[in-house]
Image (tube, rainbow, N blue to C red; front, top):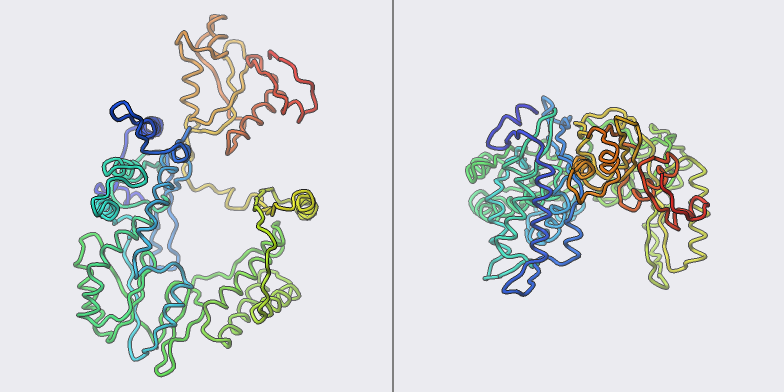
Length: 546
C-alpha cells in the first residue's frame, strides 16, 4: 500500500485533515448554486430537492484499506477507499445517477453475468477461438481530467447550455470536487488521489466505464477489421473476445496496448476449448455450439452462510434459491443444470443445511420453473421497510405477528421486515484506520467542566470539533449554556468530553439525546421535554432546568 501511495502522479500527501474546510467550501458552493441571482432575478441551478440530497452536515475523511486478490499469483493488493460518510459522498452519488445514461450507450458493455450468457448463446459460429483481456489496475490508471472532458463533450454536445440546471463550468467544478478533492487517511496520514478514480467512490465504476467506452469506440472496429475479432464484450476491466485465429492475439494485444499510455492489457486464451470468464465456464464444441456452465475459481472455499448461524431462516432459504437461480440462468442445458444442482447440494450440506430443507427447496424451484402460474395483484400496495436486530426465534415470531397486524390495519401497505445480523467475527478485527474523535459526527456527546465537574449533554450532526468551537466561542452572541457557565463562574476554558452514542439520522439523535438527559440529568442542560418524549417515558410534560 505504501508503494502505491508513493506514486506522486496519483497521490499527494496532505499536511492536515482538510475535511472541515472542504465541507464548508462544498456547502457554500451548493448554496450559491441554489440561490444564484442574475440581474436581480433568482436563477436556481439546483432545486431544493437536489440541495437536500447533496448538503452534508458532518463528514469524515475516507479510509484506505487493501484486500488481497487471492486468486492471483503473489497476492496483489486491491486498494479500496471507504467513502461512505465523506464530505463529497452525497455529491458523488447524485452525479453518478445523472451521468449513468451516458454509460449505457455502449454496445460492448455487459450488465452482469446473465447478460454475458445471453449474448454468447446468440453466437453460432464455433470454428473460432476464445480469449480474454484484463485491464491492469484500471481504476488507478483512468486519466481523470481526460475522462471528465470526454463526459462533458458528450453532455454538452449540440450546443446544449445546461445539464440538470448546471452550466458547463459549474458541472466541471462539481466533478472536480467529487473526484480530485477526495482525500483519505492511511496509517494516520492524509492523502488526495489526484488522478485515477477511487474504488469505493460511487463515481469510480461509472467514470472507468465512460473512459473505456471512449477507447472502445475508437479501436474495436479496427481490431475487428484488421485482426479478425468477431465479438468484443466487456464487464468493467474484464473483456471476452471471439477471434477467427488465436495466433492473432499478440497482434491485438500490441495494438490496444499502444492505444493509450495509461491503459495496459494482459490476455489469456482458451485451453482444451475451455475458457473461464467472470463466474462462467465456456466450452467450445465445433458443430455443436458454446456449452456454458457455472465456474468457481480454485480459491473457492465453499463457505456460505451456515445453517446454524444466528441469522433469520429466510436468508438461509434465500441463499438456496439464489444458488439455484444462478445455475438455472447460466447453464446452457438441463443436464448441466442438474449437475450443478448436485454440486450445490454438496456445498450446502457442508454448511450444515438439512437434506430435507435442501430437497424441498430444489423441488419447489424446479416446479416453479415448469409451471406457468401468474399472480395478479388486485391493487398496488405501498412497500415499506423496517429494519430490526435479529435475536433468534423471538424475532421471527414478532415479525409474523407484526406483519399480520399491519396487513389487517393497513391493507394498502406491504411491510417488509429485514433483520440486521449481530456482530460478526469481522467486527472484532478492525483493519481500517480509526476516525479521530474530533472528526466524529452524528453523535451524542457529554462535556464536563474541569473545574467543577458539571456536565452538559448534546447532539451534533456536524463534526464534533466544529460544535465544540461553537460551545467555547467567546463571541458575546454565543448563548451556549457551557460558555455561560464558564463566564459566570470564572472557570477555565477547558472541558473534557466523552462520546456517548451514535445514530444515523437526526431524529434518532434527538430521541437518544433526550433519553440520556433524562437518565443522567446533566447540570448544565436546560431542556424542555417534548410531549412525544413524555408520552414515551410516561411522564407529564414539565419545564426542567437540570
